[in-house]
Length: 488
Image 1 (cartoon, rainbow, N blue to C red):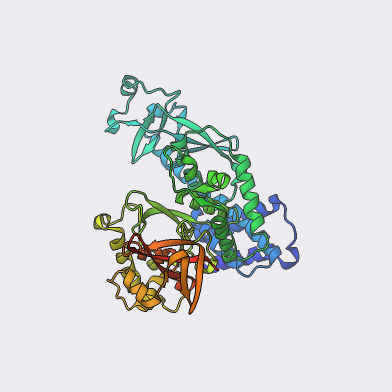
Image 2 (cartoon, rainbow, N blue to C red):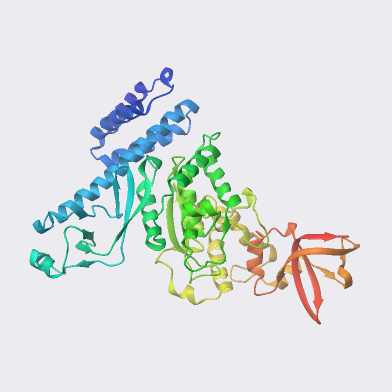
């Protein structure tokens, strides 16, 4: 098989000889792709696996391609992505049709749901079916005309499909317009993207045409990366765009479903984790980069376990733009300060679990206890990654600096002992570097044993950028930490 595959790839290079790396029409690209697909299909024998082989080959070739060849390769990737999507949809359709075909009584049903994604393409536009309830018969033998009539199942209007191996009938459903197919033709992860649009419609139930917004986003996604050829550069640019242009919605107003939608987050410039990752995933897709959205729990999050989280996977690495979008101490982060950019799985998952896999005991711990649990997990991987520049290791380095073990929590006394403090007197009087100064204004965090660990995480453990102050108010001592103060 390997020999035949190499022959097919050789033929591909013959088709794309160096002297022919000029402009290709869409029809020519399609013709080249079909020749490549047909040749490799003979070797592989399976359509979906063939597209996967071609995808691997095109990705590898893109790493060293010049600008002209890269454009051709990207166009071929689009055709390959579309082929993969159509084969997956055809496979689902064939499987469901076979299951429905067992029952002659279903032959004349007008509305058949022939995929697991609840989507249908009509005249070049994708629509999604949304419903809350459905009915099914417990036994196949009960699925007959008499029972359909008795249950008032209407073959003209009711929706019929398959769920969990059962034939289902849906009476109350809504079909929503999602997006024109031309906008997302050839993007990687097309099926999953359409599924996210259906899921949003399940909540917001809005009749709307967002094609113009998607077209604007597609143009922006390409314009931002037009000078970049490397995959890593493109990911970095788009990740930065998300963090520099979006604001996390802390209010979470009931009924505001815009914050969960990628395209609405793009329009409004505000969202939550789901909106962040949906938007980033789509911007990557418009640049021929596939990202997988993963949902789960982050156990050292303040709102755990009440609210879940979402992040993305690209190849074998993980990214969390929401947790790299800081609140409080900073309004922006430099790229070198990112915690959750391109992280290996084992260390990325030191503070999280995929949906449904979170141990129950963690839900009963306090935030500080959960943070200690996470710190211990990171400690266990420290030696493996100590020579890397992963910021996620900063907590371990900081604890070691304070002389603390993995099980010991970061406390106020250990931080003050290591870094000292300046006492603020009357009228803002303070001694700094042996000189008497006066504080005119200051933005700060108040720190104590309860929040010191969280604050240190928030400032990325970069105490060289911060100073600790002590102040007395109503005979009580308070400690403040700041990197934003004005002296006179």
